[in-house]
Amino acid sequence: MVVTRAETPTFFAPLPYWSDQVNANVVQSEVEGGVYLRDLSPGTVLEVETMDWICTLVYCGEHEAWVSGHPEFCPEPVRVFVAGSTWGGSMLKQYFIGRGMHLELLQSAHRRILTAPVVEIRELRN
Image (cartoon, rainbow, N blue to C red; front, side):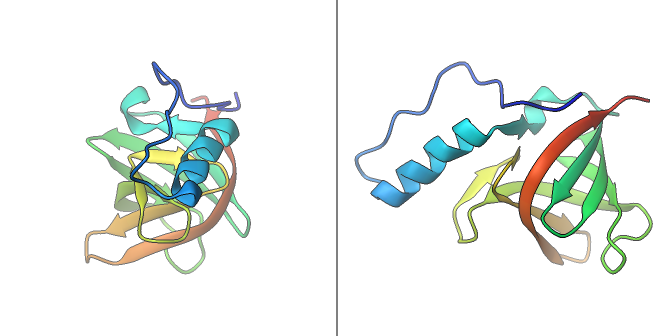
């Protein structure tokens, strides 16, 4: 199953106190789609493909997951905090994994991992 878009009750309305670029980024994240962690059950397994690697993410709940698949950062499963996704700057869409966005993970040693842009998100069945 391919995760097609985030399920949200309403669409984003541009905010007058945000720049046009920030508003455009938020709208684009709705168009590209993704998944909110709040919509996942513990034990859900996602395959997250970025522009340069593919990781397996096993959601544990409470914004934490086991992630593996990168030869340097996580060749074996590593417990991480899933902070959310960013457009490459400091603005973070919390607890969201979004296509076209960089996924931000925090390891227990406070090591920040910022991925290349996400290309695809797939739910893997057990």
